[in-house]
Amino acid sequence: MPGLSGGQRKLLLFELIFQRTAAQKNLLIVLDEPFAGVTDDFVPFIVGRLNEMRKNHNILLVTNDHVDTLKSMADNTVTVSAIDRSKVKINGKEGVDRELALLAMSIGDEYADSHNDKDFKFFCDVEFSKNGGIPFVAAFGVFAYGLFLLMFWDSQPGSEALVLVAAGIISFFIANPYFLQLCDWRIFMIEEAEALLHSSKSMNRFLKMCLAITLLVIISTVQFGCQNLVIDTLNSAYFYFAILFDNLSLMVAILCLGLYTDLPDQQVQILGGMPFLFMIFFSTTFSPGAGLAGLKNLRYLFSRYYLWCEVPGVKEGMEGCPEQYNLLYLVLAALFVPFLFALYMVVRGCFRNVHHEKAAVSRRESMKSMAFAELQVELFGEKALKRLQHIGSSVDLQKLASSFDVDSTSGSIRSTTFTNKESEDEDDAESV
Image 1 (tube, rainbow, N blue to C red):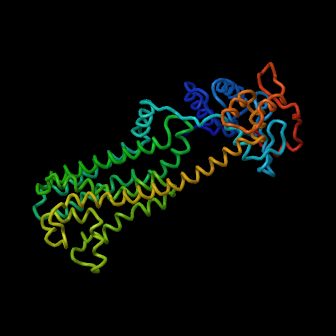
Image 2 (tube, rainbow, N blue to C red; image 1 turned 180 degrees about the vertical axis):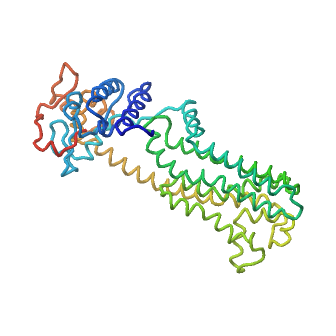
Image 3 (cartoon, rainbow, N blue to C red; image 1 turned 45 degrees about the horizontal axis):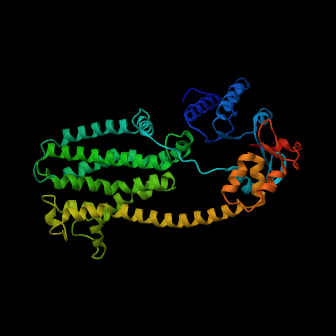
């Protein structure tokens, strides 16, 4: 958003969140410093929008600005000390454990967003817009293969290897910029996808993966067509599928690491480029018959080796080419890296599930304590009693309810033993 100040961008994003949540119900919306960079003239506008949003949603707002204005409209105020952040103050209740407070505020089941064709339309609008990568990839592909046709036109039989190498390099450089930006895309997508409520992170990853693979299929198809235009000895169906899976084997590592790991951009580029580098050294396609005896056996892990075993004028010099099922071996070699990555994801998922289950057990035990029950009632009033009964709390709920007065005006329940005195060190505190 060039040309806009920080406050204007903040207002635009705030309005976008308001519009995106207008049709939803009972969401938990977290806003971090909505008044930062905004002049006092726009404070009533933001306060008005907050009042409209709170009618249908639960709002968790973190701010150091205009605290008094927000406290007057807030149902609950949580104060975090700048000195000791392990303890918080909820309304007038001092010394509450921070983790227990966070657990007490998470009343209800986790929100599950429902998706429809509008989510897919939103994804397509972003990816195929002028700010997306697809139009630039298409333009660069037309330019690069246009030069390829001009300079390789009317190639003579016997130059198949040169045509394949040139076309493969062009395809790699066309697809590579789009695949390299997957890491950056994953980072800002995680921050924005669920905040804007247009799709989940997993759905966005899946759509992006499908789009990247589709792009690679299109590039490989164009490569196959351009090769057939300049030379007529590579037009069998074998070469089409061989080119497709060979290109996939070179790019799939960047795809997996960029979308499904937490690695930074530089590590993704280095590790994701290893299949291409290893193909040059270990596939023996650039050094037929050469290399150490034991190390040469690594050539069977690369699709390029099996592709070269069918190229006229080259296959005669290749060592140990299979006599049959060459295409099957090529496809299996292309899927070797995805198989290893899928195995890694399964193992990591098992360990993660065990960790999550232990955390869930600890959380359920904390939710049955008296301290948790008191915080729930302090924060949510009568609604908390039903929730505590639902989770099987060991607390005597009737006794707990009788210790609270019911405010007939607001319907909320407040403890008779708590006092709402102002903290003397409020200047160095952060109100939520």
